[in-house]
Amino acid sequence: MKSYFSIAEVADMLSVSKETLRRWDNNGKLKSMRQAGNNYRMYHIDQLKIFDELSFLFADERTEAEQPLRNYTSIELFAGAGGLAIGLEKAGLDCLLLNDVDKWCCETLKLNRPEWNVIHDDVGALDLSEYAGKIDVLTGGFPCQAFSYAGKKLGFNDTRGTLFHKFASAVNTVKPKICVAENVRGLLNHDSGRTLQTMKNVISELGYKIIEPKVLKAIFYRVPQKRERLFLVAIRNDLQDIDFHYPEPYGEIYNLKDALKKGRLYDIDVPKSTGQLYPERKKIIMDMVPQGGYWRDLPENIQKEYMLKSYYLGGGKTGMARRMSWDEPCLTLTTAPAQKQTERCHPEETRPFTVREYARIQTFPDKWLFAGSSTQQYKQIGNAVPVNLAYEIGASIIEFLNKVETASLDSKAA
Image 1 (cartoon, rainbow, N blue to C red):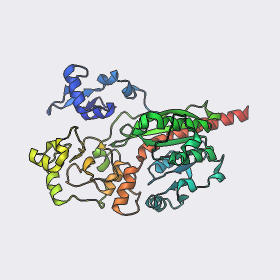
Image 2: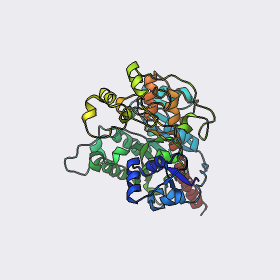
Image 3: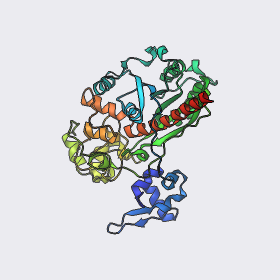
Image 4: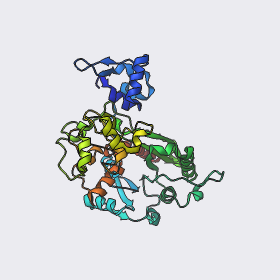
């Protein structure tokens, strides 16, 4: 455990801006110290004890992940390019079926795991009856959709026509011991929180105890990216007395250098691969942006040229003309590396990240290949659950299932 953290690391850990930390420094809420030689703001670990959300920094060492006591099985819906599947496989789960409606995602899964049972179809067309009562885990990252309320408390039947209903139908058919859904953080407040509440109501109606949904920050789980995902976990009612624990955070933050250079995460530099390029004029403009900078670091006349009408609007628009920094985690990847509102420029070279760089930032193994055009590959990677985060969720699932298995063996012995 290191003793000092940079202003960027503390900002990421607390989900506040660097400007907020500078303001706290000035008003005495959290005083920084200056690093010798460059005068950068730094914080000693003891200063962070006042923040409850950082209590993990002072906890005992993390316990090692458990090995499965038997062969635990899973089904994954909305599987995408396999980020969640790889992590769960690494934790020790045996996936018996993976499904996605996207052709290229399914091609990617088959390309890397020919032995996997990958079904390319609408999730609602799946017949999962043969798996009823035989599956330990059901997972899926269904897209977030609103429901029509009309002043009533919605149940299972009222969510028909949505992808969530199809996920819930699979739960109802298979009856797994535990089901895990992941989604964007925005689901917490989607439609003033009513969407999530309806989902919780429906899962409860199907005979499951809901574990309080939790947003996990990928930077706390060996992912060099400021990505957040919401996880919704439910335990079958006959097992509700057995505790499930979300994964414990790590006490260190990984940055972009860890993703693309030989070091803590990978034993070689990122392999060369294809990638998008900037048009000539955009490259000239992006050449002017310093590492870690964005459009406000450009000369004013260039700001106006690049931003157009956005220059005169409010808000920071900090994703525009944004160049990443080696010493910070990457901003959340999107489905394309060079969208104007969410620019992700390489820290040194003036270009978007390549496909393999994108994959590294999501902690995919270098040997994991992606099917389709480069546009399709970027899309698959940008939508994925980071592999290292998925592994931590998988380890928590294994821990829970081991408790279930032990309780079952004890009951039989008695």
